[in-house]
Length: 191
Ligand code: AP5
Image (cartoon, rainbow, N blue to C red; front, side, top):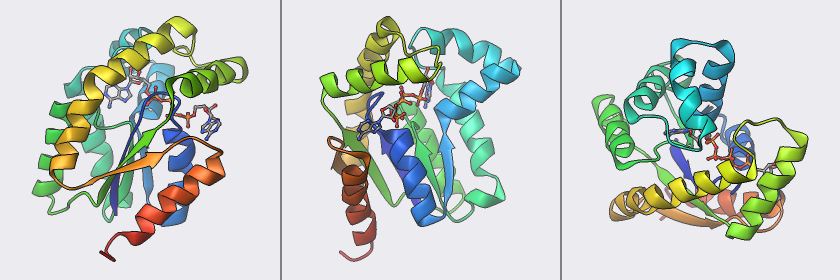
C-alpha cells in the first residue's frame, strides 16, 4: 500500500505515521527526518538543506525528489510505503506520480490531516520545551505554517481530482485520531 500524509506542522503526521506503519507493516519515509539526519551528518545535502529548514522554508524540489526516489528504490518499499511530509509542492507530486508509473505502482490514498491553527501552534510550543528542533521557535513555526498554506491547496486539489484525497479530523487525542485513520485505511478496496 502506498500512502501519502499531508498536513500542517503540528497536525500529527509523524505521530500518526509511526502508528500506521506499525499497523500496516510498511516503510516510513519522512522527508523531514531524512533531511534532519542529513543536516546532523553534515553531508552535502544537509549543508544545502539546513538554511532552508532553519528559515521554515521548503528545501528545493530537486533535492527532495532525489532523496525520496533513492529511498523508494530500496527493497523495503517494493510493496508499499508511507510518505510523511512528501509531496509538498505540485512538482513533487508530479515527480512522485512519474516514479510510481515507471515502476508500475500507484498511490492507494492521500490522507490530509486537519487541525485548528491554535491547536497546532500549542502542540509545537509544547514540543519546543521537550525536544530540540531548530525550527520550533515561534517565528519559524509561523513561517512554516505560512509556507504550508501557500502550497497545500495546490497539492490537495491535485489529489482530489484523482479521487485519492481523504480528509481526517486531526483534533482530539492521538488515539482518537488513529481510529479515524484506521477506518479510512481499512475501508480501502471495500468500496
Ligand atoms: P517536517 O519534519 O515534515 O515538519 P512539519 O511538516 O513542519 O511537521 P512537524 O514534524 O512539525 O509536525 P507533524 O505534523 O509531523 O506533527 P507531530 O506528529 O510531530 O519538515 C521540516 C522541514 O523539512 C520543513 O519545514 C522543510 O524545510 C523540510 N522539508 C520536509 N519535507 C519537505 C519536502 N517534501 N519538500 C521540501 N522541504 C521539506 O506532532 C507535533 C507535536 O504534537 C508532538 O509533540 C506530538 O507529540 C504532539 N501531538 C501529535 N498529535 C497530537 C494530538 N492528537 N494531541 C496532542 N498532541 C499531539
